[in-house]
Structure formats: structure tokens, C-alpha cells
Length: 627
Image 1 (cartoon, helix red, strand yellow):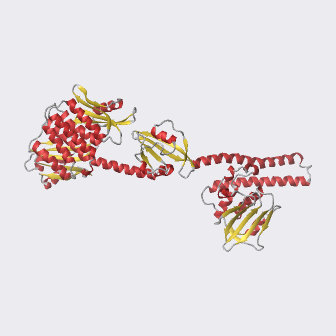
Image 2 (image 1 turned 45 degrees about the vertical axis):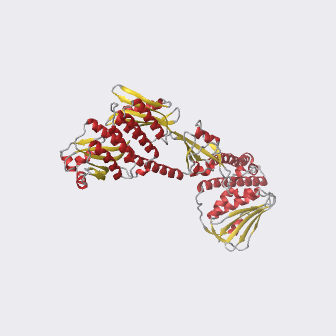
């Protein structure tokens, strides 16, 4: 027995009212076809259905008692499947993309018919349709004749379902079962897990007309627990040991499962003055099923709400945008990432999505389907273009579109392509020069003058150094990635280090006394070489390499009087491969790694690096090292 009947939905209450109307019509001797039509209309109204049919099964075969709308192949197939295996069937109508639900009508263990409807998955309530099906079976299983007992039983079902707790529901049931069956008492029980070697432990949730102490003792009897575990109505005759263990008078007892689909709501036990015959037991079994559907339906709704909350929390935690639209083109799910990307609100759920996303391709995929592109470009709410890879899924509830942000991946692929082209160019130039010099030495090295020989060797040395620096840059970038850069510190004189870079166009300005720092000499020399090469490459005049002592740091600057840098480009100068997009790259050479390498080396030493520049007035690249 499930408590919390106050959650019973309006659709269930209207279904119960419709069932009472249907059974009163049967009790008055109305034609089955007319009653089935009323029943189907109630099913469609209560469950939000569009098309439907009621089928009766007897020894002569199947008979369509009523139909509404235009039942399609999917609905016929679902009903036939339910009639064959006696189980509810749910499937998707490919013609309309709606859901199809068929539930059996049972009398005891026998399937006597089925109800099938087509509609929106969100509105097709399995519990409501089960109430209608099981209640209808009470009368449809019998010959059409007045049946006031069925009417009164279903009145009891409606009244029990309106109660707020198990005790109130049991009182309502016994109020009807007493006059109809002569029931003198009853109880409701639920199974409470398994006990090793002893089966399920039984919990009594409500009792009337039965001594609770004797009842609790009976619940320890394996035979009584077996009776309570029966999936169909089962009776124990009066006068037997089982009956006497429950009541003083030894009346017969009947156990009725309270079930809705796969969800078990416990067991209803009635104490009767005599053992019911087969027809009466079948009637009681259908009554138990109808009562179970009513009492269990709040638990079904609670589980659905809980599942929706878990699903919502899970989708909210997903970093990728996810959108779900129903067959009617309305939003069903918009997770936080999607709301941020498209500038929509969670309040959009339930609203038509047409024109709200600002992206016709994605809106088309969500509303009408079709072929999906592998990737799409979306302009986010900040005005930035982002590349997304699409994942599409179709379900009975609608269509799902998940977007995987591959913007960085796409940029990296373009960068790799440009890098390969530039690296090829950068490698080819020094290799060509070195090969030419070697060929010259091989053919006429002995005849070369001293000056020519020295010039050729100098060119070879400079280009080998260039190759070495290029390889070191690539290895450095591959090793550091985005993690910390390892440095091997030792005491050194920064003034002596910068003196190594003095040449014709490079003037060194530094204090005359030694300036000690703890640094990696190899990596620091590498960073300085890149800054000096960059200045020489982009200017024609003198380059000044300056060292200054600050209170807490040592500042090293490379100053040129070249063309300068546009202020908007300065923040991106120290990014990896940044120069590859520049128009001057091929004219001046370079891979776009030099300034990035310098930044990583300086930051690894605990310093910072920056650039000051104006177009037409040259540039000043500077960095600090802690003392």
C-alpha cells in the first residue's frame, strides 16, 4: 500500500469517475459496444490520447468493440502483442512519431481484452490506463447483465484512491467489501526485503477486524507469507490451520495483490465467511488490480519526478550544450550550457523553439530531423564564433541534439597545418645553404681564398646554429605543453651572459659590476637569443640589450627602432604559433615559437615578460628575474 494519495492526479480522478459511469451503464444492461465507446472516450480524455481502440478477446477470437480517430498499424500491432503475451506494450508510431500504449484487460489470470491509445509520451499515463482496463475487465469478462456489485466495487476503488493514508484506504475498501462479500475484517501488507532462508519479511500497514498480535504472529508463518506472495488472488478455506492462525472463527481468508504493471503496492487480505468460488475470486482479483493501480499511481508519479530531477541534475552538470525537443517542436530540456550558448532561459521549456535559438540548422534538426552536418558554427552570446560537432538522437519523446565544442581542436588542426608549412620552409633554407657550402668545399675547397673560405664556414656555422635553435624550440614546445617548465638553477652573472650576444648591430648596456641571479643559463640564453633575433629581424638599425637593477628584480630589455606593433596585437604576441597568421611571417621567416618559448622560460624562473610598442616608433621587449 502506498501512502500519499493526495498526489493523485486529476487525470486519475477523472478516469475513476468515467469508470463508475461505464460500470453503471453495464449494470443497467447497456450494449457492450456502447459501453466500450464510453470507456475509450474516458481513456483518451484521461490520458491525452489521439487515436484508440478497445478489443475484446473470447473463445471466438478478437472483436473491436470501439475505435476513435484513425488507429494506425503501430496501434494494431501493439494491441495484438498485448493480447498475445498479456503485458503492456509501448512503441513508437513511425508514421506520426507519437507513442502507442496498449494495456491488457484481465479477469484473474485470463486476458479478456485490451485498450490501446496513441498520443504524447508525456501524457500517456500507464497507471490511468491500467485503472480503466482492470476496472472494465470486471464487467467485460462476464456476460452483459446487470451487475450492481461491479458498480459498488468501483465506487469503493474511487473512494479508496481519494484517501490520504493506508488506514483510510483500507476502511473505504472494507466498507464496500463487508456488504458485498460479507467481509468481517482485513489488512494490508507489504514485503520488506529478503531474510536469509526465510523469504521476505512482512510488514502490516493497516488492519481492521483482525487482532494485530495474532496477525503479526501469522506473518512469521512461511505458509502465510507464501499466500501473501501470490501474484494472483488466492484463497485459504475456513477451518484450516492457516485461517485459524489469523481469526478465532476460522473464516476463509483471501489475498489480493495490489499491483500496477511491474510496481507492487503490497497485498490486501480479506476475512470472508465462506470460500469464494472461481467467478467470485476472479471478480475480487480484478478489483484488487484496479485498487492497486489507483493506490500505486502516486508512487509512479513520485518515481517519475525523482527520475526527472536526477536527469535534470545530470544534464545540468554536463559541460556540453544539450537540447531536447518534443515531437510537437517544443523545448523539453535545455541544460545550462545550452542556455548560455544560445542565450535562452530555462523558462523556455515547454515553449515552441522556432526562431529562439537563432540557428536555423539546429532548429531544423530538432523540429523536423533530416541530414545533420558533421560540424556547425555557432555565434555565442559574446559574439564569438565557435565550432561544434553534432550528436543527434531520435526517441519517442522527441529529438536530442548534443554539441561538442571543437573550436580549440579546429584551431589546433589549422595551426598544425600552418606549422608544417612554415617548418618546411624554415628547415629548407639553412639545409640548402649548408648543402651548397659543403658542395663548394668538395669541388674547389683547395682553390678557395682564405676570405672566401672563412665566409663560407661562417655561413655554415650560422645556419647550423639556426637549425639547432629550431629543433630546440620544437622539442621545448613538445616537452612543456601546458604544464610547468623544468629549469636547472645555478648562480650566474647575468651581465656576462648578455655580453655573449653582443655583435655589430647589438649594443649591450649594463652595470660594470657582476649581477648575480639563480637561473638556468642554457634556457635563459635561449630566451635572450629569441628576443634579440626578433628585434634584428623587424628593424634595420641598432638593437639595445639593456640590464637594469631594480629593488627586488633584475630587468632585461631588448629595444629596437623598427616598425612597431599594433596595440591590439600585443596581448597575443606571446601565444604559441601566433605569428603564423601574420602577413610578415613569410617575409621575415620564423615559426612563431620564439616569443612563446621566451615567455615560458621567463615564467619558469618566476619572472614576467611584456612588450611596449607604438607603430612607427619601435618596440621594447622586457622581462624580470627575481633576485
